[in-house]
Amino acid sequence: MPRLGADMEAGTLLEWHVKPGDRVRRGDLVALVDTDKAAIEIECFEDGVVQEILVPPGTKVPVGTPLARLGTAAAAAAPQQPAAATALVPPPPSSQPTPERVAPAPAAGRVHASPLARRAAAELGVDLAQIHGHGPDGAILLADVEGAASPAAAPREAAAARAEVSIVSRPATDADRAAAMRSAIAAAMTRSNREIPHYYLGTSIDFSRAQRWLDAENAQRPVTERLLPAVLLLKAVALALREVPELNGFFRDGAFLPGEGIHVGVAISLRQGGLVAPALHDADRQSLGDLMRALADLVRRARSGGLRGSEVTDASITVTNLGDQGVESVFGVIYPPQVALVGFGRVSERAWAENGLVDARPVVGASLAADHRTSDGHRGARFLSAVDRLLQNPEEL
Amino acid sequence: MTRKELEAIVKRVLSGIAPEADLETLDPGTDLRESLDLDSMDFLNFLVGLREETGIEVPDVDVTRVSTLASCLDYLAARGGG
Image (cartoon, rainbow over all chains, first blue to last red; front, side):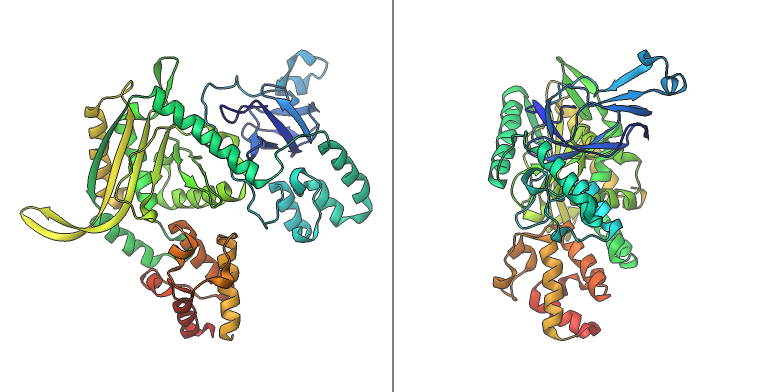
């Protein structure tokens, strides 16, 4: 059971996506886990063959508990050597507390179903709204969908599901979940302001070239492939981090630990309150089109449930864009153990002087909150200038 | 398609994006982004939803013409949805 947030002590195994005998690869989604605040898809940590499920669905176990036994390739070839089998356990629970990055509670009135159940329902032509779920809080599980598709099997499986979940204690309402998320954000932000000596830099960036390029580009794109200004800002941040890598990573055990890739966390506000900041992996290496698709997918899953474990733990910096809310600038609070947070305000038309002439241009406010233990204002300023310079050549992003 | 049918479609798309909103009390003259607290991604998803449901693509230059429920219905009707 991986730790998916600093305040997570235990998790409830909601659903297995694999069974004994299945071959799995590193990164495969193998199980759905509920952390009391969110249902998160758990990824496999290595290649192998599932030998035994150790934790049945509906069971709540402490962080660090082996969930399943996995045979490595060598063990599969020589099954007489059980010593080669490894338990499917997460890497040692990281010290990275990410309690603020949790997925949403289901909105009231919407069908609450696991991602696997949704997929199966689509494949089997089952209407989720017509099914009574037997998971926690009435969530629809795969067994419920399969039961609805083949009624004969339903009573036994549904009864089994009921028996499994009856031993689980869980928050009863959406209000409980909202309160749990609020207190998780409170804990992380309190720690941030207590421990991290922040410094803040801000600048105004001429967005006219980026806007012109975006308008011309979007005029040619169908609505399904249209780009948002936020994607240009994210890509510019990701590329600027290559030039100032000391802003991309973590402060752990008294020292800076560089991020293994440029995984940009995107602050996503949830309609029912609170926020999550899941990671866009390797944002510096994605085209704008790919980044836009990834962002749309991330926002959708953040708001409907179904974030992956790696997405809630991997972000090596966070970007928050409050432009839609109309503010000009953001003075951010860093998500520990990250060391920087980049904020963008709205793109608005302002008087702009250049080469002795004044005209009206779209301008965006950019800010950096950074950890003074790992970088200085000089390097922070260099980062913001790099973002500015990159946005002046949008066709190269 | 009648205006009532169009309105039902638009509201169905909106309810998928802002499930908690009470669309029955939505003032047709107010800005959708403001009254339903839609961000740019939500609004883009609204345009994608309109295309899926009506087949009408709102080009980027026309986005301001669908900013309220009333203007959106006018626009869709004029573009052959009504």
